[in-house]
Image (tube, rainbow, N blue to C red):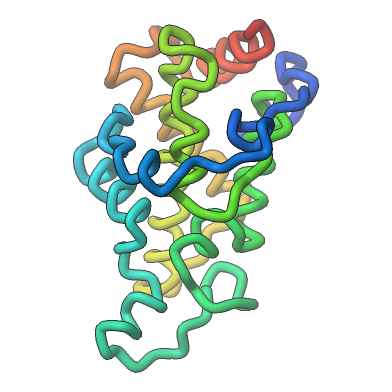
Amino acid sequence: MMLSYICNSSVAAEPVAFMPPFVRDATKPSDKEVKHFSFWRVKAPPRVAFFIWSAAWGRILTCDNLKKRGFVLAGWCCMCRNADETVDHLLLHCCVARSLWSFVFQFVGVDWVLLSQVPEVLFGWWNWFGKRSSGVWNLIPACLMWTIWRERNSRTFENKETPLAKIIELFFGTVYDWSRAWGLTTSPSVGEFLASLASDFSEL
């Protein structure tokens, strides 16, 4: 299985210290910087780009936002069942989300300081390796958040819960599909793409 390949692959890099510049410099982006950052830049399908824009502005229909619209519901996160569902909790801080983020960081070989809000994460992530070397890197947060959102909807509306290992496989498969669609890789298979990706990140 793909996950077994990922976990056992010798190409996975050793973790290195890795922080967004505003964390490294002990400052966060200003509200003005975040507001003027174009969340449409990411090369993702249009509906995913719209989802990311909505998430960055706190407008996706999580339980807290539905309550604000007058819906009466429990409000807890269906992913972890331990906290209220907000945009930042669902996409960043829920134990399921954190497991996914941690797995991705481990695979690419970085120690990333995950900030508290979605806009901060997207802002700090963009073009970290420079404009020419960040093509696939820039896809990762949008793809990961979209994967979490789809799983959340599957659990909420279809009562179907996907094992974490399968969610990870779906994430990497989606990154590969998007990378192929945007001409960011010529790898003929997911396995070769992941090997190339890990190798590229280890050299940056």
